Image (cartoon, rainbow over all chains, first blue to last red; front, side):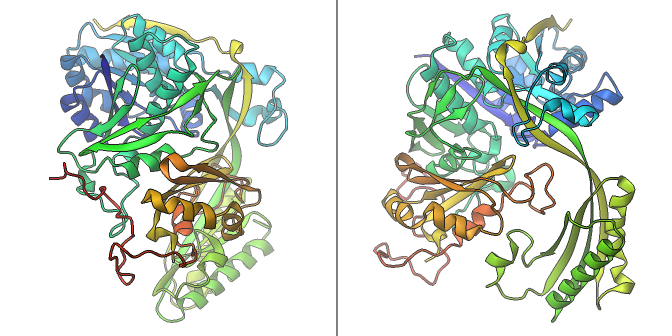
Length: 447
Length: 131
């Protein structure tokens, strides 16, 4: 029975490159997938494209492809990625130039576009899911509106012989679903198979998170050679259990525990994981060790896909200014609390920030608040963090300034003050009918 | 007994909703998790951080519970002022939660003084392929 081998070469835009090279070279792969788009990444990419129409795709695209393209070409591995971000066409042009430079002549490159629905949502009557207000009310604050598209246009690209497929906002698991649909010739309404393929995509889309990354807890959950963490491979037969594994000799581990943690990662109702391709059901999945770094996963299924597609909206939402300063030794926590109170009072008096201001004691209670942290003992050192929202960059600058002044105007022994300001690009969502998102596939050959 | 002795966990976010999985190391301990780690107890544990409801999903086939925390205070990952914007550290707070010690079976000889979980954290014991 035919088995398709898919590797996951990146779990986010900034991920390590070496594991993808190991996969391309030693993974005996049919497909290598790079999932590089987080919710906010596409909004930032749209801003980059607005400044320079030839940009707006993943800035690491060239470096990643250069590292794996020769090995993939030599071994017949097809690459699928959403590194096209806000500009798949320019990403395709960049890839074509790279292929020419590397001597990969004849490489068939497909770009998928159509996920950018900015004009559609601004012109239509759509509601922001998080606030209930109309999308059009975001007006010039709206930076980006990209629909999560599914496997279908990627399958179209593969059926036209593409060896490198570059998309924009394709849903993460769809990048993995498409090669399986293409390989096995599944129909668009074979929901059970699509649900099963979606589980493969979900387990692999965060790359190292299923092979021992984000897992180690020394003494409780040990991971060997974490520094050489390898990325995952799925061995997928047309029907039946899927094997999750990795290249032998790499660091990390694939066990029932690593697979279970990733199975539920960012999942809400396990019986209704909504994607553009299907509503997948993971509620009766089984996970079984079947060998060293080999785990069998079975039991996923799916139901009919939704009629609407989710749209990720990126919009400007003011600025956040922040300052930090450290205190040490006995009484450090008392001095840190005094410092935070002083900075808060000064910022409120000056009118910079009256409501949206937050003071944390890093090392004491910054992550989960005073309630959970109350029983912990006093630490040797503590860092005060003051963060507040402001309408302008200038106002946000004042937040950190008011922490820095704690040197000469605050409690004893403050040190290591730092300041920062960042513009907030917030994300919301809306839903639009599938018919409003026609996708186009463009195929070119590097020559 | 702290939860980390019999379970592991991972948390993630989607907008203003966080989820925390809680997975028994040994399938025999799933029933204890299901009995003691209720949605109400998790809601209480994260009372400072969650404004909405906590919903619990049960996955007996993998010995796991999935907690979905609605209405994370501060508006979610992209606009929050919080240090851990994604709420990725929530799993550690859940694992430090106490559950009753009553049915404790230390038959495997695990010493309560050592910092080892009862289920074994990495490879399944008896993995014959382990070199």
